[in-house]
Length: 255
Image 1: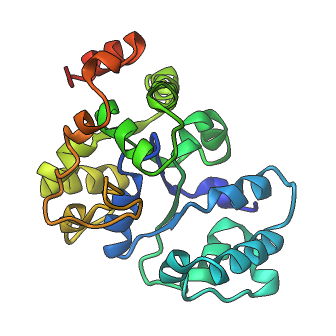
Image 2: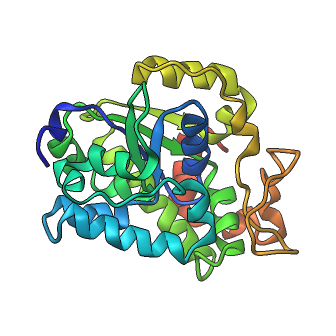
């Protein structure tokens, strides 16, 4: 990976359906290159299972067959040896060079690998985002990411527990999705100070992909960014929340 370890990428993580994509979109709209869901390929390259050239080739094939990835990765150009210079160079091959080069990667499950991430990128700027677990589970059910309520809460509790396991030893900031939607300018300024960047706007937070309801399984953007807040009651009640999840909800100030 060359000199990558000397750099300070922005690493975004959190439980699925908690707002990681909203953070990606805010930063990308401000000229910061945050790759979206690349880790499934990048992780293998980091562990030297295959080269970054192979990783780029795989990503190129995925982009060709996935419409929403075409939107984010339309500049993709495979460039041979450049890919072998390291992860930032590989991103250059996709997004093109930018005058203010700041890069990063987003994958919700990075929360389970943070010690490895920091060992590889000790100067990484880590942003963890979390959300009311009941709304997370409702979103998972609508998107068919969870088999049932218990499975959804197992995923949320696991992600929160992973964060709690390293929150006192890894430099990072933690963002509540609800605060990001309610106070985008203030939260945007907080993120910018931590990452050492400038954000001209965090208004893109209002365009968070809410993701599925009883009419459709597709993601969509609503005029009301809080459309799904508290809407879990259409799928389950507070009595269905497992005890471990209730304790975490209380500790995070949600109940």
